[in-house]
Image 1: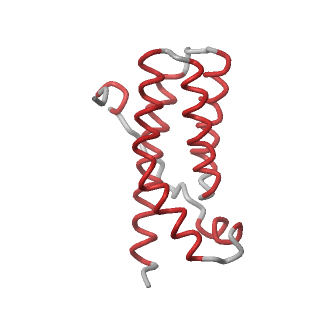
Image 2: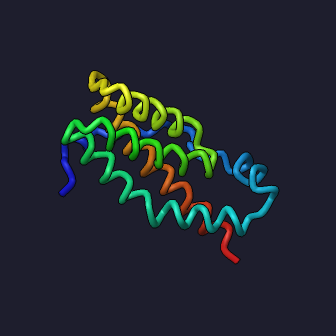
Length: 129
């Protein structure tokens, strides 16, 4: 069950989080590869958010580190640097068992992950074919 305290109060930045030009450059212009990676992200990100939230609820540093690490990798693949940096901070906090800033960072990252998903869905719709 989702914890409303963790999921509430999302503040999305006005700028896009996914750098599609950088994503395509990283994939040597292979739009089909980016489409596959975007679809994998969309299929998987909610499961990763659940793991992240569970680690926060249980104050399990190892699980927080692992969940944030996987999210960081996904965000690296699609070139979402601001969200990736936040995931990296959570990964470090999990490794250090430092819970001072975890809750607000988790809230912010959850919102960013949802925005990334929306951007990917929009991009996929615009680039059908």
